[in-house]
Image (cartoon, rainbow, N blue to C red; front, top):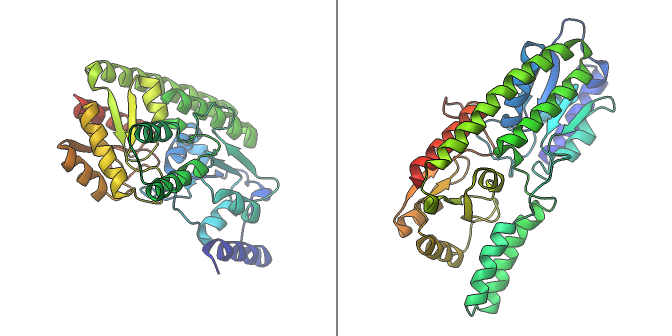
Length: 331
């Protein structure tokens, strides 16, 4: 039995035994609003808006990889007891549809925060980079087919567009507005408090946005080039005037071939990229090998997950750490 099937079976058992409060039953007077978020970044945004009226938890644990996550029975129960569920959407949480269908409730509010925002195209940076290579070189047909199949995994994963919108603070502000509206609808008595919390937090995000812009302006224009571990940073790059040169892996579930790694080293050298940026939830060995070959430094950025550390234990701290490290690495 798969982990998801076990989760579904457990939820059914809860229903028979009457052990689950269920989203449809609503909260008792004085109880906190029960809310689930798919990832810790969204959990933090919800906590900022919800304040003391909301009890929120993340389905994907802090520090874990949303791309490879598999829900457990406890996750199914968490969903079944939540009155509001926030997810990102755009294919980030591929496992979420089945979990909601099996463990959710028809009276439950499910919000995809990326809905209505304009996503960037799927894998556009990776396709452009590889297209240049094959125009300039004679490539063995079997090797080319293997690389094309490898890249296709990422195109499929992000078929609706790149899901990492929150790495542009302007999009995070839109997420906050969506969270405020959903919480107020689920808990009208708290609407005024949610509104006040959201306005205070939006002001903090405006300061964060200005800080990031200022840090980027201090980087020499010719150095404003990013090579990141996976394709999580196109919104960040576009919003703040950075060039996303390439990514180390096209598909988070598969490492690149030796040929792809060698191509990236060559491109880093030709573009004179000052540093590359990895992410803590992924294996660091590949990034360190490429950096050593290119004789540059490696810095860690945060994208899909917060961590239990002051440098990235909240969305604001995560973004400040990211831009500080980008400035340090690009100089």
